[in-house]
Image (cartoon, rainbow, N blue to C red; front, side):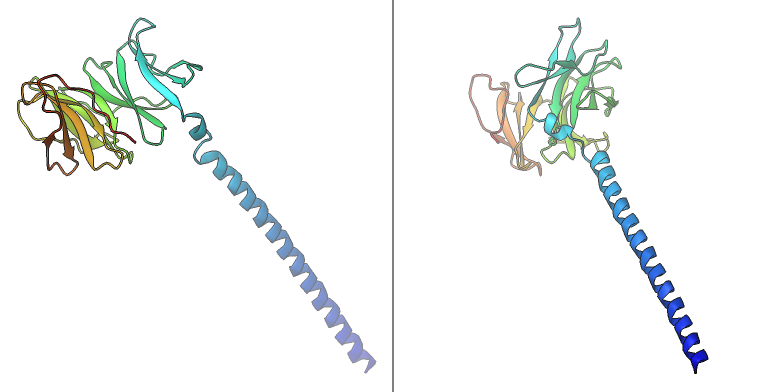
Length: 232
């Protein structure tokens, strides 16, 4: 009987040691998981959208020839922290911010022809996204940031095209011949585009739905009307 009790006690002690060991392991694993989770969040904070999202708001991009040729500059709204973004012997002009402020599209003749380029807001990763014999100028981001509209001079006439951010899917937006259509802007909800057209032998402001229906002359005036802009 005493032998049986001793055996039973030994078994209980062994079981208790195993249980405590498993509990300790579980605690160690749980602690490790917590650390990994915290490290993962820290990495996510570092590799996610940079803090510059706050910094780049309220910036002004513009073109200037103050360094001997036309370059694109950026500055704060008070004129401070002026920076040359393009810094290229060619002429770079016509900057347009993406809707989130992270990218700028612009025109450059650095390849001996006016083409559309895109770069980060700090001037890095300058990339040509059009490569056509025509002159491609005046890029404008769509409000959702998925498209870029631009003006292309084909056969001596300015025509409006639209494309994806990487330059693919270039499509003539307005199918008219022998008309100068340029200086476009998107409505904030991306339902319409306003632009200048010379189709009536005079610069007038036109508006068109993005589905390319219902083209309308808004000004219809003997004077020259230019530079349309939508309110927010």
